[in-house]
Image 1 (cartoon, rainbow, N blue to C red):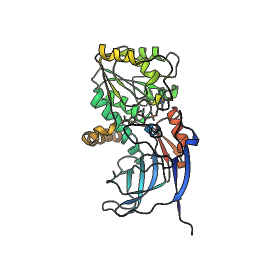
Image 2 (cartoon, helix red, strand yellow):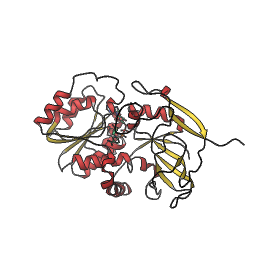
Image 3 (tube, helix red, strand yellow):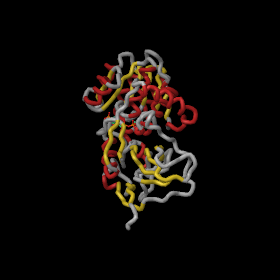
Image 4 (spheres, helix red, strand yellow):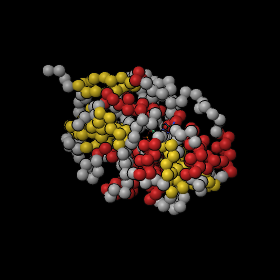
Length: 341
Ligand SMILES: NC(=O)c1ccc[n+]([C@@H]2O[C@H](COP(=O)([O-])OP(=O)(O)OC[C@H]3O[C@@H](n4cnc5c(N)ncnc54)[C@H](OP(=O)(O)O)[C@@H]3O)[C@@H](O)[C@H]2O)c1
């Protein structure tokens, strides 16, 4: 009888500009065997995240690039199907960095278990996982919103931005979201209860943003860069804080962006308005703040005070399309792939 097969999607080649289907390859390989002292995992849901675009390049960064011919990196919710490790049994649901694959051996450090009775397991990849913690840490530890201040965030319907705005409201601030298109803007106001939402695709985006921020901006949570930063910069108040979380508008850039060079205006504003711009990668805050994040945001979800939205594609083979769509804003909520049921 033929051995059972697993699926994986490998980086076939490095993209030049936006990724294409040719940069990915679906492969069938034997199901891995249980490693001594470890676990054998079946992937249920794979998370697709903007940082993966950076890993496709062979560039120096905070994490090493993906290897051509190897599975794309990524975190997933998995079921333990075999265990040779105390404390883990078949049927346990865990979070693991498996990459884009249907099965994975695990012999690394202990994995976080998810309890479906506490929250849907998919939230471990979104609002109660890495993106949620990014929002929580960046806003509270760098942005530090005060009651009555104005907090602005782009990619506002996504997993990071949606929580930033909701936490800003809980801190007594005014939340203004920037999102692509009327449907996302409506969701940001009607479901997430932001005070205002502005469509960055509109021709009069800069004017609309200024109108939505009549007292200027005290905290700008930077998720995108590019043209959005150009519109935000003149609105920043003295002593404004800017947690620099992501720059998705430029992840696939192969040259300088069109339009003016914003560096001189940015440096002038940093000086003359005493701005604080602080880049961060979420895990630098995890050791000290992850437990309080899980407690606070977990309670908000359980009580219905915090909302989230997921955009789930079916089948590992559809991961490249879902990933490329996310980079263009075609997703509506946290992007996940259901790999197996
Ligand atoms: N520093 C960290 O530790 C950390 C951790 C997690 C995420 N991040 C960053 O946080 C940001 C949001 O991540 P996420 O997971 O919440 O992603 P997401 O919102 O699910 O997806 C990305 C969104 O970015 C928006 N976008 C794409 N190109 C844009 C452009 N040129 N101008 C304006 N908006 C654009 C699109 O939304 P619209 O259709 O609304 O424009 C798209 O849906 C990303 O930059 C990511 O890299 C950083």
